[in-house]
Length: 181
Ligand code: 5GP
Image (cartoon, rainbow, N blue to C red; front, side):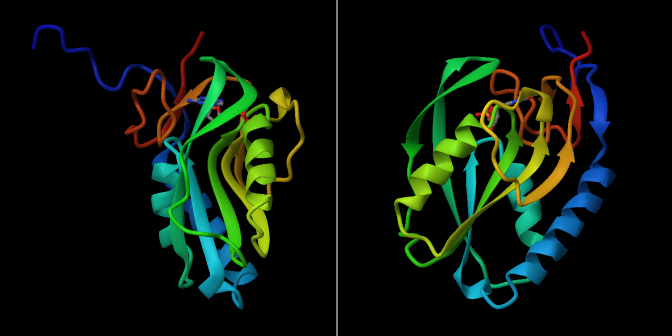
């Protein structure tokens, strides 16, 4: 068809779907163990939009009566670097007071967004706040954050797919890849 580009573009695969599935099953088992006695009060908070695909798979790997909520975040900065100045574009739908919160992120890059989230959620009096991120780029850290559950560390490349976008596209790729320079 005229104007139709090849889909997906020729990204290099970093993690195939099978590797993602296997690691997410492990994370789910670990979280299930750790929150065994707190499952009723466990709230997964997905950070829109990047974490949506990961969240959908992770929640089904956790065998507890958890609940889910989402937060929309806009970061001021250019396309490749967050400034740490964050605006909530869509807030939680319910109070998290007394709840055990697990933030679900796609990637921790500079750490600025996660840092803001920890500070913001702490003011709402949850019983605990922990962080689960599918990916971490350790080379880019500006503010160290404790990642309690981590899928994979990745090299300093711009990654895409499985929720992560380039200019809002390619979130629907079934693998995580990167653009080769
Ligand atoms: P941080 O505040 O840790 O620097 O940035 C976190 C956010 O930046 C992530 O939630 C993600 O939306 C975006 N981000 C950081 N690195 C990448 C990347 O390599 N690929 C994509 N698609 N988004 C990224």
